[in-house]
Length: 66
Image 1: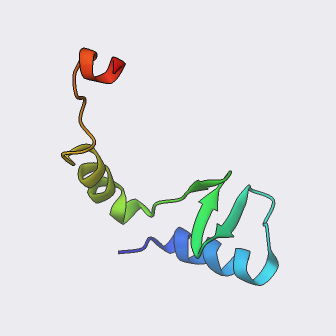
Image 2: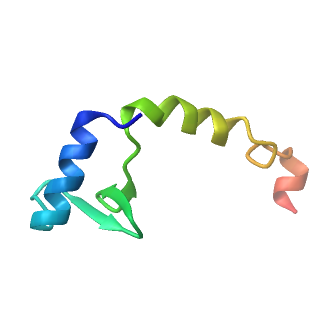
């Protein structure tokens, strides 16, 4: 499921610290510029799970204003 770039960057960051590209490890997750880096093979699945979630939807203008 992981792409080769993800694995390689993880190894470099773990072994050498920040590799001058803004990568870091935070709470066991690879991050790029302090945002979680999602491997290419998982991006569509993550987007679908977050976008299609019942709690991710819009509750309507009035409820949002409340």
